[in-house]
Image (cartoon, rainbow, N blue to C red; front, top):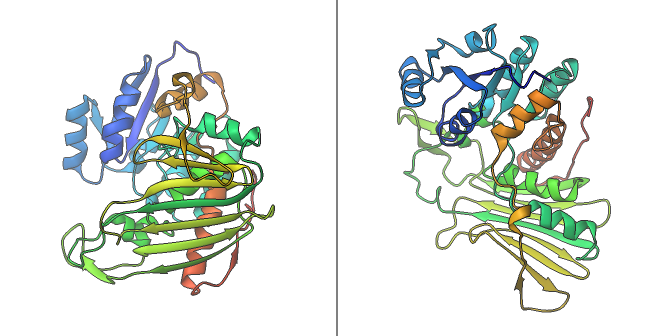
Length: 356
């Protein structure tokens, strides 16, 4: 908790697209917050970001940001490969941390981040939340709390696109195990939403995935790059209460993409159409769907930077998204990855081994 009159000085590690689009404008719009230093992958791109956003200083490397005694909080906007190392170093240096999702490359890294946060309870730690459902979360959670859908029988998540159909399409950082770890396609960000709504995880998962184009032009210099992340993955999970999780994520589906979560219960179903940004409900046994009213007052929208700063200033608990929740979605992610690697052998979704 800090004095509301005290300026909070932010250091940026990684000024990629989302940082420039959301985080930098978000921080700079908050009174009493100053973005003082930025470090990107090169001096040239660091300087470009600094000039575009009026940031007074650039750092030669990320360690200079976390070691800067004038900086109060760090935004880690890099790819997942650096999230754990930079976060732990920042916490050990007395800095609050907001990190981009996915939390880390794997469960071990995520647990190391959580353990570091527990060692420093005076510091705020937050993961950028899955944003697509923010306007729907309150209504969906209310319907589930009131058992409007009855007993949940199926949780169906589908997100498809055509980004990996062509074999000559260059690789992206998301297809690199070294950079992205066991995070596959958009599975993690959609699973985070499901977990936010249900508050629990499947006990076990079975998954199958495929890399249809094992080598692609590299995204940095065009040289051939081996692909370790599936172009398509399908998941079946089992909850203790009897419900099933069914997920399909694909980068090889041409035509109109699919982008939705369905909750099928004994009294009816709920469907969130993320492409249309609408919520629909159907009564049990009825084919017709009806739109669900989502009041303006319940639409949370994007307020990630404001939430982070508010937690620093007031001590308000982090809800979207805490490190404890991040570890739990990484446990699911790693179980899916291990099942794919093992050719579809069932894997338990291990609970966190550390605190939280």
